Image (cartoon, rainbow, N blue to C red):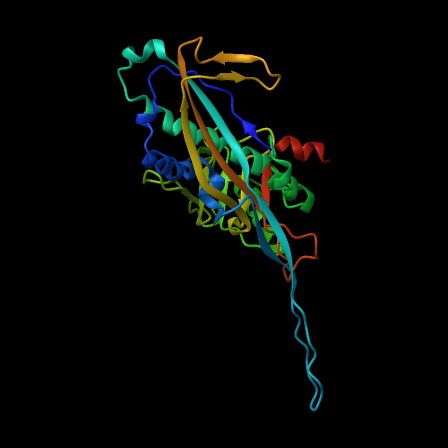
Length: 318
């Protein structure tokens, strides 16, 4: 399923000569910084549209053997989780009439915007199911809700207690939290929290580009616009169970003729008539949650993630 971003009209000349091959590689490197899933999840290369990831579906068992008795056999089963790369794309029209007016390197301005836009769409789809390709399966919030691993804010004595409850639920499912993602600004709520010994449970990052630390694990605030504060405040997870497949085939092409149409087929931009160029950017990415069987949870009840949801969800559940 193709997912086309809204077009952005920018002033300046971004002709093909200004988009060398190394720019494509730079965007590939910049993109993970704009997506919490690409930052924290396990990334796998994809050489084709689909990739199969085996996931443990049954566990071997051991048996006591009496003297002279026969040893029993046990089987280990695996299920396949399929990752399908779907297309993300954006078209950026550029009016020719302002080429001579450009006073800055517009490409340097556009690069992070493209990476941020693509990171936003990936996070929205994978975490909350917004515009999610049907081939991606359940989003993380839907999976955690079905497994009962979410905790509503205010359930415990304070925010720290609520978050610890999520960790407990995941442990009871057989998974260990190794990182968090949250809505923007949650760090300021966490900064005042203390453990039973009066020590801060949250350590703000003092180095640019490094995540903060919550209960000793990295916390990434999702600042690309993907986070839905009406649905969740924080995500706690075993991030190794989130799998992102990236086909590193981000392509760039500049056109000076042609038309841009909306989904209804109406022409919204005519490059020749309106003296403009258009840069088309395309990439393919897939996402899946690997949910292997654990020794603790009943089969089908395990899930490697849980959310801290707004207090309203606690009241609604009463």
